Length: 347
Ligand code: AN7
Image (cartoon, rainbow, N blue to C red; front, side, top):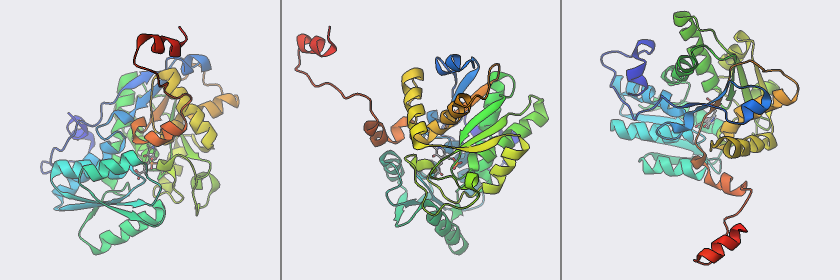
């Protein structure tokens, strides 16, 4: 299936758009086992975007961006990335038989993501600077060289990403009351809001309040100014000057939502809770959505009776070193016999 095939009626596709697909979209919407009931929110759901083919939500938009790049005659795509965009760009370029170039900030990209981009055959350029600088270089490059920019400033990216809203509404049967979502470059919150509005126009299922969360050390939208040296353990959202800043504020304001911060401690706590209480292994940036919900719930906001969705944007396998560093226990090394195994288990 894939996003282009499933939602052609809602996307700017023509008969000349290649039907590219790696099977993206159609991701699980999982009802919370424990966290929701504990908070008095039985209708708490997690949208598992880490189940996309390259392990993040970026695939939804990238499939369309690459298909349109080909339709428009490009043989090469370019992006700047904190990692997931580059993995998605490289994968779809490979499947379409075109070249990809990715610019990544030095030291800010997890090993899993970098390995993916290389494995898929991208030309990976590590910039001695931050994501925001990499993005401005990428924007300059496409002015001079014949490459298609596939960052979320490319409108097809957001068009593809909005399809996640459709799936949520279809699965629940109505819009959620609140949608919690991590905010980095602010493309995804923009795309979801566009999707909910468009679907509501067609199906009258309502729209949610958009609840976006930046990392406290990388919170330009909340602070109202660019952040020169963004700092958070959540490398995916270590962004100081989001490309979709204005449209994210529009999503917030039109939906009567909010954009707030969560600390690294809150992110880590939620990341652990998702794994241990729900069986959901995500990368740290993705846990910002649940961290935001827990922050508001702990401060007394009453969500009882609400339908609440937390978007889990990327797979935990993206950042194995973060998982290792934040492990609560270590594997036990024992001799290869049943007595030693039983002794280690204390049974
Ligand atoms: C797991 O890959 O910006 O607010 O270059 O990888 O739409 O940027 C990644 C962002 C959330 C934030 N969760 O989404 C990139 C990149 C994960 C992410 C975000 C990202 P936006």
